[in-house]
Image (tube, rainbow, N blue to C red):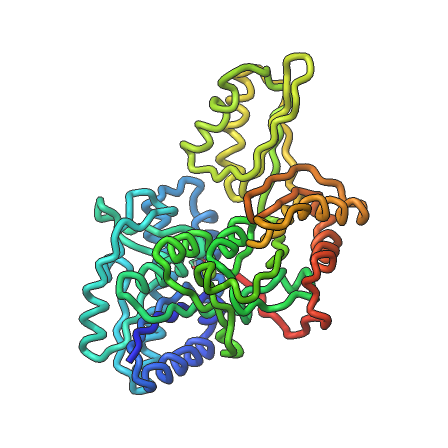
Length: 417
Ligand code: ASP
Ligand code: MG
């Protein structure tokens, strides 16, 4: 008998029919003799709607109160899923993150898990029940309700899988697995059967929305293999595992990742002296702004331009900080560019094959795509371009690196939350 953690994302539980459908899958899994722990997201766009609701009530949004509000989304799904299981004759019980002992630090809206106790889940399983856990939430060391960051129900699932020593952690979503590119942007995208944690981590960092970055980080650090699959087709999806196991396929490039969620800020004509970057990036870090790419141009006449990218969602926070610092250090101006795209090539094989960057830049040059910024890791190359060039660039790179499936991906994809 196996212990299986199944996580269902927002689109998988978007309406009553979907909730009944996933309850049937849970019942089926249980009837095969497995112990099942279910982790659920909020229904459809519930979390977005709660955020919009808060926006319409007040500009002042203390983190503690936002977390009180946002955790309700997952509670709704957990209770409804449990009822649907009862209707199928499956004994089940729902829990909040706090009830199952997901202990976090005290940072609201982006809390980090410090410990997973899981006692009540173990008790429920021992009593023959399915445990249904509200994802995305925990309780802080200060005993406040916290959320773990957008998309973090995946993290709840992998953390529970680790704590319970589960045999499998299945992440059900609205796509059939991890693709070589977003099929809505690159119709020739293919599903990958396996991918390494490192590659998945780079893909998530590069903006792939299939799995939340921190859940992949967690799964890698604790070696929790993840099976990303669809709750619409139930077919075999993509296994995310450690590199040895993933080596079977070993393409040089595993995917082209596109991201429209970032903005670019340029601080113009900054005095070129020691300490300037620290003055700029320290307060941004203190405000939890996730700065991504940074480029500092060479100095002319003692001044230099510093450009960086960050999530559009952090722009409001960052804007006032950057303005203040720019004034303090005597920079000439601050410019924003919202119309950017980040396009990344990810592949473990890059480590041993030189020339990937050159080929990427040549491909983009031939497509007349201008590159504004470049950054690399050992297994990733990312460029920032104009958002208008996104499709052309992504499709061109997908073809150039031999990733095309040979047939256009035709399955209708439900809109992601
Ligand atoms: N409901 C949360 C969100 O939309 C968490 C999740 O779905 O994983 O970000
Ligand atoms: Mg999600």
